[in-house]
Image (tube, rainbow, N blue to C red; front, side):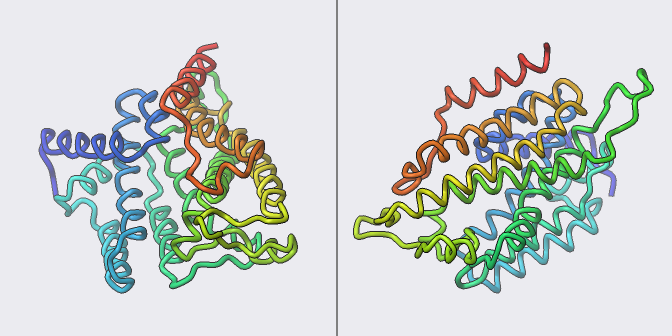
Length: 299
């Protein structure tokens, strides 16, 4: 179905509104992109947000599964949709090699979250989960960024491991999300910290009378430091992508990753910060990370 230019532009404006309002940490990086890439990435984000909102909403499980199934079906018929998010995504997919199948992986991950009580057995299972809900987003972002943007001029060859690096960076970010949200997730009957590791460290994840994470012997704090250090290793793996991006895409990637990496480092330094609240960077701190990423990209 052909769409008028004004209709497509309106669809992109809606996706940018969603991203600006809902993306939080990610928008600090997305806004560093040139307009064509920024609008395309906003379309990608808007649909990913829709999937996440279904998973986190209050509807019955069967209703959520039906809604996620409808999105799967919509992805096969993007050109027939008048939905602004799908319309913008269809246009983005014509302009960039967007791997639409990655949305299916994201939906697979969100369906995992719909269990009555979510638990992860071991580290290998956690990596699979992180790859679905965050590695997929990394690969979607990469399709907009591209690699070796000056390749035609320099004769350079695109990095064959770029998708691997993007996947690893997404896994790193999701590990930080899990560490930051451990208390909130527990309240929602979700424990993403691997059960085998909790048992190994002698941890029973629970809250005290005040609703804070209960850690009478300091075992949880020690484990969270260990988990944050492991996530830091994954940031090192994933950030190998940055040298293979053009300057603005590198700045966007570095800013988005930098905000979560700062959170990860704060958790590593003082895990108790996540016991009674969701740890956040201030707007000024996020802006500093974004500006630093842009300045480094120019050097």
